[in-house]
Image (cartoon, one colour):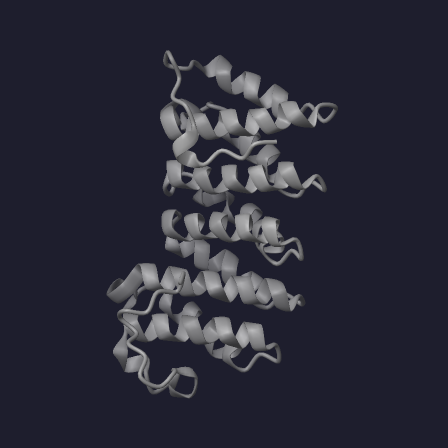
Length: 238
C-alpha cells in the first residue's frame, strides 16, 4: 500500500456528484477486499480536499462515511488503520466545526490509537488529533478530552492532556473568561499530580499553554513551569 501525502492527492477531472460518495461508502464496507477499502479511504480524502461541499452537504452521507472511517482506524491491518487515521484528520480539516457533534464518538478511538504500541499508528493518530484540535470547536473538544483525561490507561490520559494543551494554546488570550477555561484548569491541575510521568509531562506542557492564555495562572502552576520558559513562544506540538 502506498500512503499518499495530502499534496499528492489528485483533483477530480470533473466535479463529483453525490453518487461518488455512495460508491465510496460501498467500497469502505467491502471487508473482503482491504485494498478496495484502502483506495476508498484515499477517495474520501480527495473528496475532503477537493469537493468538501458535496461530502459535507445535508444528506451527503458524511455520517456513514465517518462511521466507516472510524471502524478502519481500529482495523488490525495497520495499513488500513494508518490511512484511516490520516483520512480522519483531513475530514476535520475540511469540515471545520461541521463534525463537532461527532467528537464524543471520534475522540476516544483516536486517543486509543495515539497510545498504541505500534509507533507508526501512534504517529498517524497524533497527527489526526492535532488536526482535530486545530479545526473542531473548543467547547465539545474540551468536553470529550476531559472525559478521557481520567481514563484508567496512562497512555490515553497522557494523550488527552496533550490535546487539551493544544486546545489551550489555540485559544490563547481568548481563553480568559471562556466557558472552557474552568474545565481546562481543573483537568490540568489534577494531571500535574498524576502517578504517571508521561501524564505529568503532558500536564506541564498544558500548564505552560494555560499561563500563555492567562499570565495570572503562573502562580497556580509554578511547580511545573520550567525555569526560564517563555509561555508565549512555547509550542505544544514541538
